[in-house]
Image 1: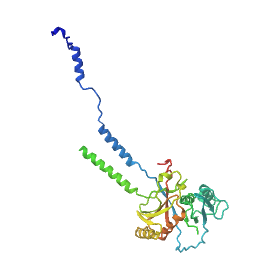
Image 2: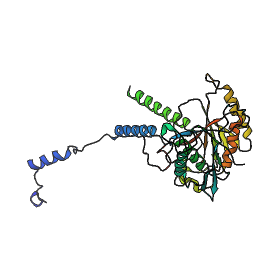
Image 3: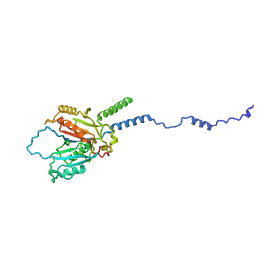
Image 4: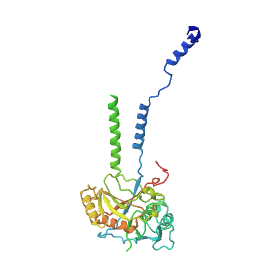
Length: 171
Length: 160
């Protein structure tokens, strides 16, 4: 076996040497440090969860309750109260009635309009009616009327600017 | 220094969340939603809330049509104290006690405000005994709770 029969290995050239040097260098890749970004995002998330309010805003409408034991003293004859009777029609409908008036309001907007029409208040230019804003108004719902509709009636009375109204129960 | 600040901020947020949960501990229900509402916010800090709690349900299920389900009064809650519907005289006693202790204005009227929160679907004959119980404590003025304009369930918030 002589050296001539073995094929010579290719000689490393300058060219090869340059290529190998390039390969051993670590590849250039951008590394983004995620940890701090996640920290900040979580903090922002918690901040917005805390500041958001999930509760629905609730307000109040004030009504008087009938007091059985009151002994009233007045020099003026008491004015007759305006009676609003609410009765239930079916499962969740209602029927409104203004005692002494033939027209029955179909909904709470009509009730409000009618209450305004029968009001006497010169300062608001309401001169067609006879009920003063501080005349007593009595709301009498039947037992089966939903609470929603009771508060609807109170709202209509307040919106028509009656100030002296009370809630009673049908006998 | 940095970890110390981190921990401090976390503790601040933790306590903020906890205090939020404490203050929102009210009975879950759908109160009446009014069209052209005159409801206003109550400023007075001296208030006692009388809740007429319905049998528990998930308010999200009923947000579209709160009146479609019959609602049954379950208990009355006055300032986190529960009373059975059959023992409303205890409610009168509690309110009477609260009213006697509350401060009064120049005319001798109590400054305590009574708020009545009742589910919109309740029938009036379930709320009326509670009204009678409140009136029995010598209280002649009660505030009915409803949603503020633009705040009802499933309602576009038109006002901030």
